[in-house]
Image 1: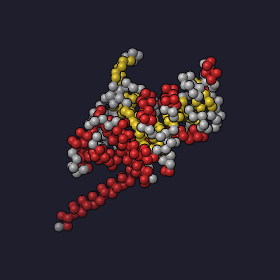
Image 2: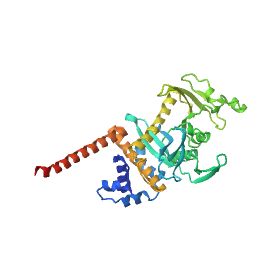
Image 3: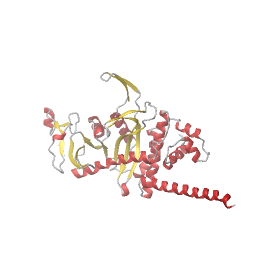
Image 4: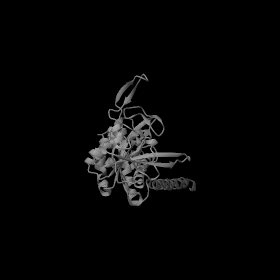
Length: 363
């Protein structure tokens, strides 16, 4: 990996307000870096999660804390008009309830609390590649499939974070990653705790005796008082879970219900809820990655150049997070400052050009 070009390209992603192309970067550098050089850089060796850890390790070590949390979630960057490939293909978007065409990014975000929002560091990532084809009998058509499920990727990323000796106490996940295999992996193999959302139709037993008898009931039917935490048991999980119910109001005024489950018996309702709400940091991270680090603004065509562009966008966001820690300004405020400076520079150049045009008229 050419680190000089990585720094240059990631700076370009942060300072650009339009499509990010090799030609555009070459022009920005006044021709000092050719567009062919940038293209070769993006098409070079794959920049993967291990390479990211080597880059962010100093920052992670600087901010890490025993009570840090690791948040894993995925997002889809839609690219409806780009040619389909094993990387850029159709993925089901749970937020929209339908499949969309784009790149599916799974992120592991490390968050520690502190002044001005603490620190958020992406410590691992994976891009879903659907390299296999299977034939669906019921629909009578072929579709792409990844050789590894997202839950398998989830466990592999967590193991990598532990192998990297990253300090964290809790793993936070939404309902999609609440599989019993993930719960057991975190508690028994990683020796960490978790807080996860549960579907209302998830079946639990209220005691070990009920579990032995096979007497299960739906989570949504549990009688949970406000502020209460209830001990329950899952069929495949060898340790108890502690469940709470949260009632919240949506933006449209409707009421929603969220059930949370934790492996930590020491947490009360308030503490469990407070810790889980830190999961929102990964939503902010994905939003900033798309809005401030030019994630979707590259017209790259091949799988390698597309995946390496994603890597560079993540690296650019790490730079933005470093600046946020120092300046105490959030990502969007920092980008707004860059935008104002760009407009000022354009305005000054316009004034200069107008003065130059006036000279012949005076003569």
